[in-house]
Image (cartoon, rainbow, N blue to C red):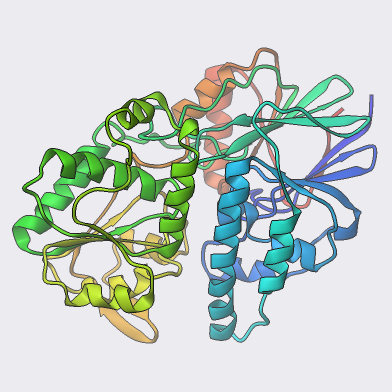
Length: 452
């Protein structure tokens, strides 16, 4: 039996910065290399040196294309990593656009806080060249002691949980798991056998209470601004949340042809991601596939306008209400959303809707947790618009769905919890013990555990 070591260098006792090092008899594999997010204090960790020797890493496996899982990959190459980055084809395509977009945001952040630029466009280009597509269920051998297979994790397009096999033992990294009954994504595949499971716990202490009413809640906001002649600003993540919202609006507009409120998708990144979703429609769930039989485009409908540049984005402000604006980023940490919030937040006729979890320390969390104002380039913007949040569109599995997924393990697994804050991890650890009679461990940052 080989010696197996696991060390977490991110998303251990915190939500973001996913980065886990697996060592098999000294052969080092990195699972994810994500950006630290959630407030400036945490964000500054991205400029710290990696706490491991980058040049000793032999392979990188990427679970999916969200920034908190892939955002430091260009930095890894900048520091000397020479190997491949393995991911599903859809993840490779999505990572390409999100890393290029993030590099521009990092430049702005660096200037704002007098920091060196974290990585360059050339580093992003090298990262894209290093991406190697691996299909779901395609077993890939890294060396004569270690192979891995990717399985559909739900969550977003191309997301995977990773099952390593070494010495007859299965080591599974969940990545981020998707919930059940989502508008577009399939439910995560059954786990099967796992001897060791490194499990995300983002919603380990909560249940998506409004899942059954998510479409109704969204459309209620649409109708509210129509009545008030206001503007609905929807904060969306470029991947999955944007496509979910567009698919709901698509159904509504095509069934209410007399409804003519304009919708602006003001996010070049989301627009690019939507094109990739269209290319991989075979990965969508049966509900979406059934709709495609009579509607060849789930993300396009009358009165939808996609802005392609900043000039078109600014023109939205001159369009009389009612109107709907979808913009990123999802936690209001950058992108065009900030400018729309500054323009519309002070008017009580308007409505600001956040689609999903807001990490503590982000502007999105600040606004959704009772703020009276927020800072916009040194200017205080009063917050008088209605503010709400819909967790029912969350791309993450909630507590019940995580427990159900664990329950399907065909043998007794050793579970290590990651990707959540300390209080949630402790609560989820307790829940696993109560419901499943399994003693899960909580991974600590920079602490090595032996999986033997």
